[in-house]
Image 1: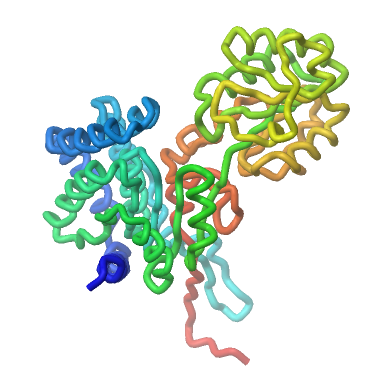
Image 2: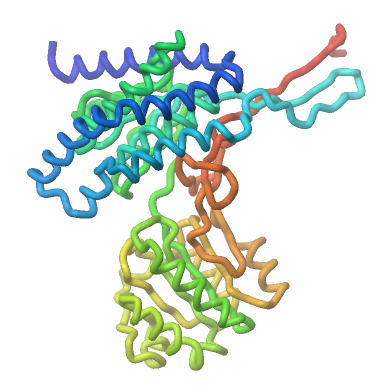
Length: 422
């Protein structure tokens, strides 16, 4: 048997097992799911030496491959990361369970009671890079929402991901729950991803997390619906009415707190009426923080620390201490710019004008639209979801951070008393 055929059969079997396991999860009570999550937290602590041992294999292999220091940092399951995974399991256990919630139950003229019940999506396929802590975070959210999950991490984290899955599966098996509810693809061959994306009979949704190249490959290859965001090109528009004492810390936090994440600021727009007075001030603050500024001709003329932007800079996700700056003449020009160069991730206006704020909220198309707040707040934990499996910049069926509710759908439920349709 060829290697590709073996991979195809192995992945298809995993998908079949996940579909079967998903049916059993529907009947689990909230108490049972919460107890499982707490027991998984205990198991991670108990198996910490084993997990570190397997993680070390990945780190050694990564060093030999010449992975960057940043990549190795994301790969390491340090004590801090382990503690975060353990606390994450406990946090998910403490969240309200959306499964079984009945919404909008109402009586029709013919006496039928019609409502909608939240139910699990079924089987989630997740394809992601580097960070093995995603394995536990995603498994926890899917279990609480009643979904089975098949996880395909990057080849650089294969030993870590398999070790974490082994620990989580052990908890399920010990409680007579099908361990196929949480599976990690055990091979690193890219053919496994292609086969996984063809299992539309068994998998209900694919969630990719990683670089734009990975997400585009998944979107173009998958036969299964994909929830995705290609990149995070986030903007702040400083309106002419802005309180500049608010604007500066919001801009600095958005750009410099963690420049390498998808909700970091990548473009700064400043109203022409305040540009001459404010742009030199914020440009100097950003320079002192190590930010390289690339701007339009008007902004370059106003601040000596701003370099001329190249055409390809506009709309770029730098994921670094680099920021595009542009002077605009109106709210409409700012919104037009965001529509052209944004990625529907996060857009912010700094303003004291109520009408402008309301127009911005209503007219700007992004997964999170904010007034006088940092772009960094577009995060499941910060927005009250407790945790997230990713951020979607598509609109079907989720838009923005995906928490437990976004891992469910709704079916109609109907109570009748013998009614027939006339």
